[in-house]
Amino acid sequence: MTVTSVALVARKLSSQPSQEDRFRALDRALARRYVHHILREQNVALEKRIRQGSLVYKPRLEICDDPSSSRITATLELPGMKSEDVRVHLDKDDTLLISGERRSRMPSDQAGDVNYLAKEIKYGRFERVLRVPKGTMMSTVSAAMNDGLLLLSWPRVSPGATASSSDSGALQA
Picture 1 (cartoon, rainbow, N blue to C red):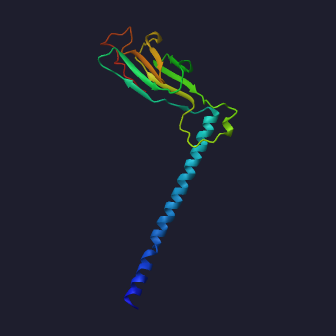
Picture 2: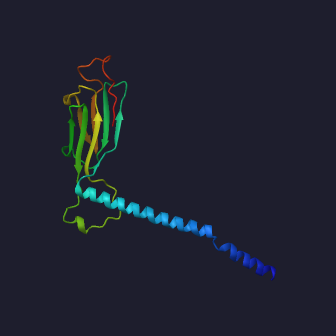
Picture 3: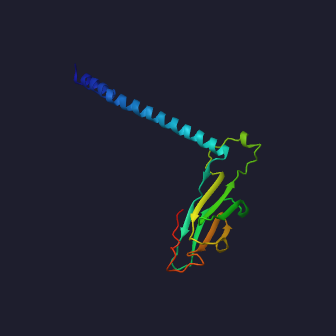
């Protein structure tokens, strides 16, 4: 054998994957297939829940607790929503419930004929629950909708409580 033929044989042997490399490639291929299968199942289940109306999503939220202010302010992102489509309700257990439903603007008779290349806008029911200080009354909660943002504010302490005996109005979103 000449030097060039030895080099040629060595290059050919090194270019062929070893058994370990073949098993790693197989493992990656199977893992990729499994992940795609799981993601496809999750998407089908999610679409089914959306169609049934059982999926409730939480709009994004910011809560501002400025110590220099006597009120706590929450801002919720509700793009495309009108104020009449959003409900704000104060429950007996000192929770503020914000809820509503965003409907697709596509007429329902055309919905089946359209293919979406991307579909990232969330439609359906939404709900967000915020804790407010004990004894807060709905008359002290203010709400305003502007440019797809719902601004809510309520007193840091309930009207009947003194600053020393009340909790600080800490929130749990």
